[in-house]
Length: 506
Image 1 (cartoon, helix red, strand yellow):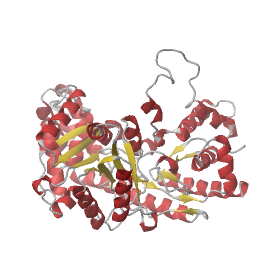
Image 2 (image 1 turned 30 degrees about the horizontal axis):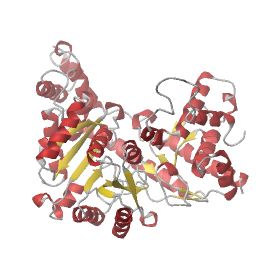
Image 3 (image 1 turned 135 degrees about the vertical axis):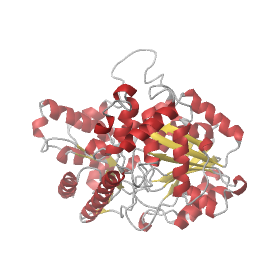
Image 4 (image 1 turned 30 degrees about the vertical axis):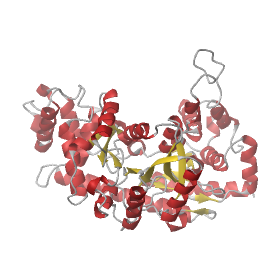
């Protein structure tokens, strides 16, 4: 079978054609910013993967030519889609909140079906919501849940105060990120400093809202660490080009790079933002996914330690989510953001923006609360809940090493340690002839490589070009979320494909 077959190319064509449809809204009349927007983790390779999976499921003509029975999706951090088990206690509480009282918390046999602490917590939530889980909440999120998040942040940061009124519960971290960018990008001259590589929601939303992308490069040779001189270079270059740089995005632990920044590195960033009057957007959704000896150190704690919380010397928005960690509840769309250092008029306008969406998902709000405050020591569910979390975490830690070691053992690949998050981001040596073949198809070389990998093995990864990288570098991002046996098989398949690909284009 030829690498990058007609089947895959036909799937790609669908993303760029108008399919001959007429009407008021067409490709020609559509917003140019929407057309410019790209989102790599659900991009071209995934569209092709979905096409193959549909053909495999339907046993469509040609599907028998593939040497695999299913697609292994490693393109997105979606833990439960690839086998991560749901945590029991949060689902118990959530189900009781959703059930009518008479068949749930007030049923005479409820304690035969649910642990006592789950029933107690569900009753607390129902009381705090007042109108039940099917009604809108306060636009910032129910106060009872924001109280839990504030207590979680205070405990995490060793006593640094957190105000529930500065916390917004959001539809995942993504909705909060978009709202802040809407406020920051006042006109097309405004720019945000974003890490390269970066999670592509930032580049996508900046394109959508007509903002300028101001890249700063992470140091791959130093395990993707931040270099203060690179921050200064990036800012100066943008300002000299006439860009009004208004903020900086920090992703820690890193996505797609998997690094955990040192305490000194985070402090460098908060000082840099304060000195240059930049709003710091700190994406911390992987703060529980830390697998080595470098502990997670929040931007807020760093700002406190540097004396930048006094007199609002730093404007900071931090983000977290129930989609990652060991909860993996992506479909619940539970997230939060905390505002630090903003005056009341700005907060009023951000509240207005949140109000225009009425409120975030109530089940997501509940899941954030349960993530922030689990069962207490002595509760019936405490030990089983902690054991379930520990088993998931330790498996993630093992899987991170399986992928890192496996990819580093492939000649022509190099992968930095997966210190945290859920991803490895190897560099791949792509032969010159493959680069030429990709150019003839109008594809970036690593998209061409990822399509070849998909077609030959069924492993779906995201081309590194979708995250940004230095010129001349090629690679991909893969999660290590599939179950351990599947993951070991995937690493072996990646090795076989790379050997085949390199030989074909030698």
